[in-house]
Image (cartoon, rainbow, N blue to C red):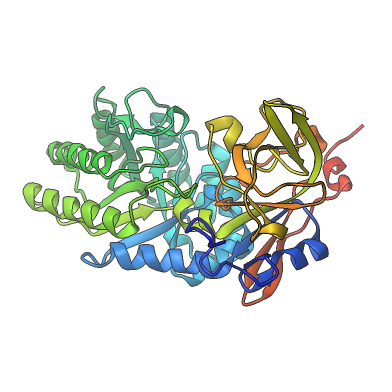
Length: 435
């Protein structure tokens, strides 16, 4: 069996028919660390970081590639991001704390979020976060008030909603008119935000940000949004607004199944940067920085989730259910977004696919289904299931539903597995309770 491009970069199936990633035999890892288990390939993460940096800086040197840490935030991962000289997109005080724990350069941190609290903004100011992407009028007031108290002038951008549909899932669409995110250009709120921010006097407004949603599998929404935002920025010159920094956000599509067609990063970058250059010339802008924010596209393909098969349920002529020891507690995406995945029987990777099964989790919900109607080798209790493209949002959105501990996480490099998040114990689930 040959592996498709949805697996980590250096994956292969050995002579015994076992899937190997990062120079590690996955059966050996399962025997040592047990399941459920998440593995990340370090080489894939570094390669993706370099791919984005090289693609977007090809024609414009002042591009900051910022990893959107909401996809997965972890001390070891952010250390890799730091070593690859990427910036960081955070959306909470907790994500700032993770960044601080690895001495991430705070001038390269961009603080997003649609409802930053006073506590979070104060925490960010005390730790010298580089840029605040303000999302609403309350944040303008709060940040100005706190900055005045601290006698600082923080660098800010305004997140605007350009009213562009990215043609993705309704739950992950963020740039249309009817969204909780950003100042709407259509309603006039964005213009009012420009005026209010400039009038504060102690907020250094440098530019505009827009994020359309995720995942986006075409370039047209970016092109349209760039045109809308640049035209708006030109009009705001009447208030003394100087358009120095621009971010088209992220949301770049990732291939979750072998049948999906996904644009290469170079196509996204060439078309987006060409449009930015075109509009800059048209409106006579001289941008200092362009900020691009991939999250999923950096880590998704690097991660594989591993499970052990337990109970089997066969309903003749209808379905065979294959139950595993994980599920919606470590991957809510299929239940939440109807996300689709492929699967592999790790210990039978060279065996012929003979039956169609549905892989279901152990959680007490009928919707706890990870992969529906997938053709695999004959599956037996004790087999091991691998689900690729599990590196983004699975762990970030994981829960303790049914009081299940969260899985252990490994990072693999040149045959060496490293624990980057230990497996939780039952005692961890009880440590915050009081009686």
